[in-house]
Image 1 (cartoon, rainbow, N blue to C red):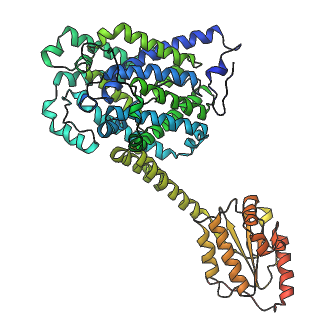
Image 2 (cartoon, rainbow, N blue to C red; image 1 turned 90 degrees about the vertical axis):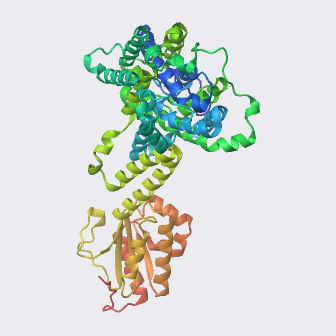
Image 3 (cartoon, rainbow, N blue to C red; image 1 turned 45 degrees about the vertical axis):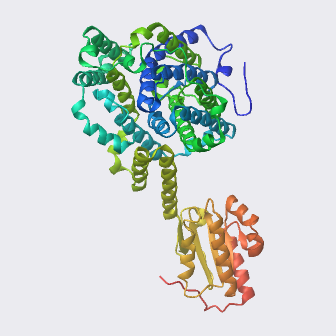
Length: 583
């Protein structure tokens, strides 16, 4: 069965058919069950960390994290454009969520997430999914590392057992200062528990017990210690129950109503919604690309954006958080044998069953242990190795990497991506301009290819030949103007060789117009030699071909020289006359 509506073609509707075997189904069931088990502590931790009572109020944070993973994960797998993508809440959104909560409250967060879903759907319908691949690697590396730093700072109080009260700030600088001031309030047992869990999760893969997730083992051990040693009652170790109350799953959730969707609220939330949509697009499509390399497949980015848009549009109606593709859970799904979207749907179902069955016991999970789980996830998301090799990068890439990271930490995702992209574009233009050369060609020059050899060819007196090497655009157009200014006396004929110009822009066209005007004012003319298709189309569309004269555009250098001799004959130039160029 295949479903396609414009750019929307879910992979789940194309993969299940005659080629789907019993072995595939068993592999998907096994992978989905494993990922569902791993997703349980992550969903709890992300819900509690993203919705602190100090700014979100008395919302069932843990339940909301689970609800987002179940509903969002199911929709992404059912309707997404990737075979193995696992969706749900992710650590990347913690800084954005906290910022929106502080400024607009919980209802504002839900409305912003819905608006982000609409933006993502529009992006998918408009075929903008492929544009993410054009975001330079230093931008995404700096972005993910900046998010990792922000998340680590956000999690530090829970990790060390510092009471995170209403006065606790969530802006980066203020929070670092607040943590430093409250170091004396560290709960030693909670801190030891968090550090022990982090070490266990980090070193667990080296023990060779890959089938049992280290995060689950760490949480089970930590919970047993809290329960049987009475650390909660005797030593004040904070648990999930401390934050969520006696019931993990509440009787009712805070839902969005149509009355919340006012024009003024939508106007106020359009920037946060854009932040969420942009981060979902980058995070999800990068995760899908990682999955493609692991399974030798190719996802449909536009369908992926539409699916994530639908997930983010529907989850807030039930009080859910932003939904995105999760790199770690997707990679685990692949390693465990997941082959089709069924694995992602099974993951959502298993997660729901686990929460319903274990909700009584999950109340005793210590928050420092949950913080340890997220700390390791955030640490692994950071591109720390890129900063370690800054000295090996080009200066421009290093500047973009550091700028993207710093702006993400201090100003947020949208500002970081906007500024870093503009900076990367400017530095790229400068680099391309540096590679473009405008040089004088003489009869003694021997160039790279046989078509462009001037060696042995007689360049008539009164003729100058300039070669442009590389893209001829606004970053390099000034070099042509400089070449013209260096001429002590303009030649009667100027040949501009364009065999090595793959493309040109309007600024380059304007430069050629200026050159043509100056040459004609001095009684001379210009010949273009060997322009490629794109430059020729631009010149023709702008009317430059008619102004310069079609006979003065030649495909080969020999023809250009012959045309120059014809023009000189018409001008009757004395043999001794020769244009000169200042060094």
